[in-house]
Amino acid sequence: MAGSRGRAQAGDPGGTPGTRGPGTPAVRTDWAVVGAGSAGCLLAARLSAAGHRVLLLEAGPSDRHPCVRIPALFHRLFRTRRDWEFWSEPEPALGGRRLFLPRGRTLGGSSSINAMVYARGRPSDWDDLAARGCPGWAWEDILPVFRALEDNARGASAWHGAGGPLRVEDPRSPHFLSLAFVEAACRAGHPRREDFHAGSPEGAGLFQLTQRRGRRWSSADAFLRPALRHPGLDLRTGARVLDLELEGDHVTGLRFLEGAQVRRVRAEAGVLLCAGAFQSPQLLLLSGIGDPAQLEERGLRVRHALPAVGRHLQDHPAVGLHFRAATRRTLTHADRLPGALLHGLRWLLLRTGPAASNVAEAGLYARSRADLPECDLEFHFAPAMYEEHGFRRPPFHGVSYGAAFLKPRSEGRVLLRSADPLEPPAILTNTLQHPEDVEALLASVRIGRELAQTEPLASFLEEELDPGPEVQEPSELEGWLRSRVELLYHPVGTCRMGPDPAGAVVDPRLRVHGLQGLYVADASIFPRIPGGNTHAPVLAVAARAAEWILGSA
Ligand SMILES: Cc1cc2nc3c(=O)[nH]c(=O)nc-3n(C[C@H](O)[C@H](O)[C@H](O)COP(=O)(O)OP(=O)(O)OC[C@H]3O[C@@H](n4cnc5c(N)ncnc54)[C@H](O)[C@@H]3O)c2cc1C
Image (cartoon, rainbow, N blue to C red; front, top):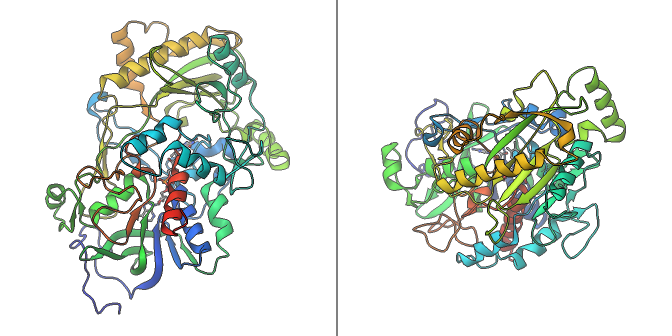
């Protein structure tokens, strides 16, 4: 079979030598899963458990690295070979600043480099999905999915599950400053939250974490490793998918690069794209699936017109307040010698202490305006200075906290830079282009400053460093915000789900509109960004996809 058919795909990918040509004879499988990240690990596990042959292709290396295991070191993986290290285009509303956009590039994907906060989004986010014409996605449909996935250390309840693959635990050694933040938020009038998942998350508390005994519990740990014993599961690392192969409207397989070899895969049941919100749309575009005008501009043959591919990119804009601490007992320098040796030893022996911290230990969900029906801000508190993604470390002790806006109105897009599959996509986030996003984050600064004046937190803070006490006028604050805002590592929306092919990429069962044998199941399918951290919502998406593919829902 292989080689007898001409390459039925989107023209020559061009660009980097070595990615051209039809490749070696095709590997046959039932399902090809692209990307062993949050979603891909779960899907590969579920399909192989049901007896299907599954080829799971991951571009990155294995996840065997201490900074993956040890929670507090996650930011040490940024700009290493386990991070794709994307950067946005110059952002028009940020004076041309480029934003750093880390993405996991290893087994577990971004769940191997993330901050481990367990969050599900607000119930209203899921009801909104159903209201957009996506049956099966309302909160009452999704709560059982979360419960079935979960192995919560607190045990089963109406809100939580026990015995599932995804271990969720309380922090083992919460820092006293994180507790002080929660206490200050409660004294400032916010409700105390023992559990952010019992109804609305509004209020202050400690986050639960995707950890097992003080160690990261990624999607690779929860789903992939136990599934490797399934005879039908073939996992390849260092396998970078280049594009999809089509025959008419049927996706028949794909091409991937392994070392210097281009290989072909014949996927008899279908292809599942789980490459994340930047690379799933990139792969569709490279395969000639997208906005025809855009494809033609890059010299790609149009195989299937779907204008929404790469559009509607959203992420949570977030801004941090930084304070010089009045105590030397912060985690700012916890990874420096000689203290790091002690912390490392304690973690190895007991799995407690600073090394077990996920840094963003405490949270507060609040409203940016009192007249809103529900919370639209999520604060993360770090008992350490966390500036510029952890790259900038002051010579003194400090703490950082700040809010992410959960309902951003600004939308960006992912485009191809060229037809070269090895070039990073051109990502424009349009952060803070919409005035409502600016208003909400300015309100978060007011709330944050109020907390800094409230005991018991106030006594531990010596000086506001950023924005700094001199920055008070609305115009000054807005200027500061535009110079400091970042994105909270939660991109979604670029292959959005919806019933209408004119405005969506996948249908409510995650099948790509108008094509046979192609699904997208990852963060890219959310038409509106969930109101909270996105790892667990992505797992719910993958679990739903598995149920539908296997016909069990
Ligand atoms: C630094 C950071 C901190 C975060 N903190 C939190 C948090 O505390 N809590 C939370 O809930 N969420 C957090 N998130 C977000 C969350 O981790 C992501 O939303 C989620 O992991 C996305 O899952 P995904 O399956 O869509 O993509 P990913 O998990 O990113 O998986 C995509 C996979 O596809 C692979 N891939 C891409 N292109 C190709 C290709 N061409 N060929 C082969 N393989 C390919 C990638 O290498 C990757 O392994 C964070 C994310 C980051 C980056």
